[in-house]
View 1 (cartoon, one colour):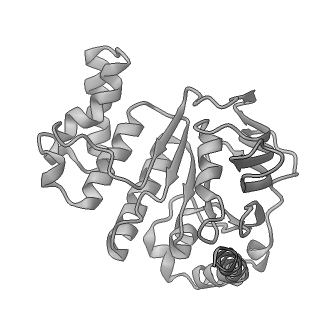
View 2: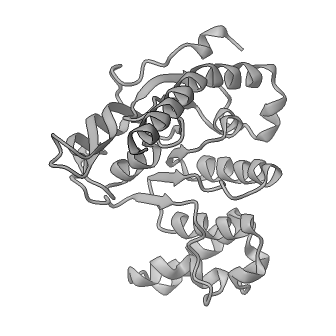
Length: 287
């Protein structure tokens, strides 16, 4: 692996001909009037996502990773700054073409796997033949074809997450935003799910943004990794992995994998210590 791969990527300010989504000077404050009081979750954050790339975000607990994703998805309005998707300001609205997957199992227990996956399509009034076409594709892609008539209670945690991802895929999003989707799974299942996610990414050509606490997950899956500071969070460094597009979990045996995770930890450790110090100060103030 070329040592240049461990250098910060020139993302936030480098010109690009194919920017898919962008955050410009975005801040997010909860409570107060947006200027005084309240809790600042995000400091001024710039981010440019290239069309079709796999981008992961890591950072210490409480740094604002999920807030960043919510703002990027249009689920939360920025306090200041602007978010654009395909060149248009989203202005606090979830834009068409955006799919979001959360950590929590969001499947409906009373519906079969097939009906869970097709739920959004039916609500959108999609033609029955088209629903079946998309459903068949998603079931095959996610390895769920043999479980189409099963209920979520009959599936493992990893398989239920596959259902949630498949339900997002059938809506044909051009950008997929994932907030710790494998956080509740064991280490081995996470690796397998990572392989599934990479397959989805390659087959759909979607831009993917993943929020994760797992450094190995970020190192394995990503084209670029953004490292966030302690709260108020902002992206303070980006690392390019330079992996081939057809990668899978076997990349973890590559010596460069260790170099990347070591670099991530060298930055994240300092920010995590800052976050702990902030927590201690806050606790002292409440004593």
